[in-house]
Structure formats: structure tokens, C-alpha cells
Image 1 (tube, helix red, strand yellow):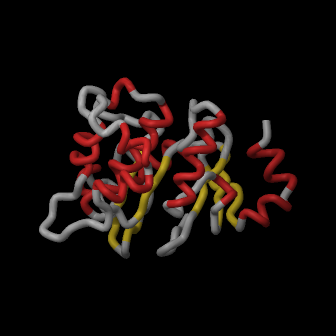
Image 2: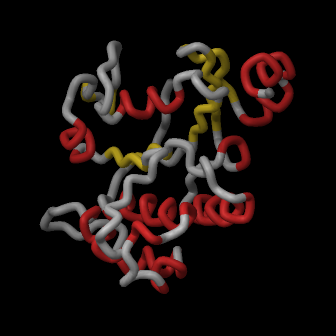
Amino acid sequence: MTAGQGEIVALLGRNGSGRSTTAKAIMGLVDAQGSLLWKNQQIMGQKTYEIAQLGLGYVPESRDVFPKLTVEQNLILGQKHSRQAGRWSLDDMYTLFPRLKERQHTEAGVMSGGEQQMLTLCRTLMGDPDLIIIDEPTEGLAPKIVELVGHYLKQLKLTIAMEVSDRCYVMGHGSVVFEGTPAELRQNNYIRKEWLEV
């Protein structure tokens, strides 16, 4: 699999196909074998914090907010510590996600799943990543919240599967079984029926 600069790529597949494990392997959260190149540098086997410092951001499926900290404290924890200011500020996050501005002094643990998902995404952006990996961005959310999260992700030129993807991969049994454009996947009945549809 590859992802080019400015490109949105979706990794699709049924539950248990290996999507989350792939995301975690990229971030060094699980043991993995193989090769992983980031800007022509081999990063397979590096520690998670080292991978993050190279410019990779990760929004986990479990959201992983700091429940006793406020929204604003969670965001500040995500900031990249460097002499140069990042591309994203607290004000940017509050502009993109007005609900977080309203809840900036609220403990993250009492917020809804959708609000926590927005917060986790924003905390990742505060680290100024060059690549963002989002694992299951709408898992367990109510349909209205899925729509809201989708709206925000589109604003940030991120992805919810094929709606905004430039290219997509489909996984099955731990391997890539399809690579192509969303239009090509829509036309490939066999791949959809065999590997995506329930």
C-alpha cells in the first residue's frame, strides 16, 4: 500500500480483516514484520513516540481521551513541542469544531462519543502531523453523530471510506485483495460482495 502527499486513502474490509491491526502496526503499537517506509526512511520497529515525532498522527478506534482533563487540557497535551509553531492552533480547532469551544472547560470523560471523537481528532491535529491515520472514525456512534463526524472529516480533507477517497484498498484475511479508485470498487461487484458486504 502507498499514500502520496495530499492523497486520501481508505482501507476497507469486514471486521477482523486486519484494518485496525495495520493502523496499529504503522504506529508501532503492535509487533509487526515487513517494511514500512516514511519519507524514504524505514520506520518498522521504531517506538510509537519516535514514529509520532516523524510526523505521523493516529486517531485510535477507542478514542482514548484523558477523561479527568478538560477539552482544552486534552488539546494542549496534543501540541507538538518545538520552536516552530504548528499548522493548527486551539483557535483553529474551536473554529472547525464549535461544539468543542462550547465544552472547552468540560471534563472529556463526561462528553458523548461523538464529542470525544472530535476531541481525539483535534488532539491529533495539534501534534501537527503530515499524515493522519484514523481508525474506525464512526464506530459506535449514533447515525446523526456519524453524519456530523463525516462533515467535520470532509472539512479537514480526511476520509470516511469511499465518499471522499482518492484511492482505496480492501483487506481480507490480513492481505490486500483490492486496490483502486472508489469508482472502480463500486463497479467491482465480486470484491464488494466477497469482502465488504454482509
